[in-house]
Image (cartoon, rainbow, N blue to C red; front, top):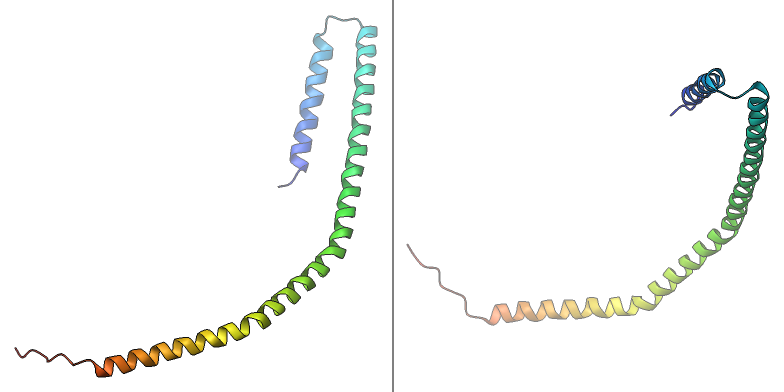
Length: 123
């Protein structure tokens, strides 16, 4: 989404609204000027606060990025070593399970060969 049309629309709306208020206000010129001055000072203060907060957010993002560059690679290496260790520890169990499965299959084949075969019904 492009923000330029939105910005232009908001600016135009603010200018039209401000000029309408200035033309229809029952206040004197001095009162309007002092009101505008205090409003602009408040706006500047809020804008400077926003700038400080954005700088803090940017600093936090940079710190997070730097710390993740240090932590993520070591975490990946730890995970890789844990997975390798798990594979080494489970390899004998896998071989044992494969042997058990083979012996069960052989026993089933032997039982099937010893069972009497059903005679096929003639139709």
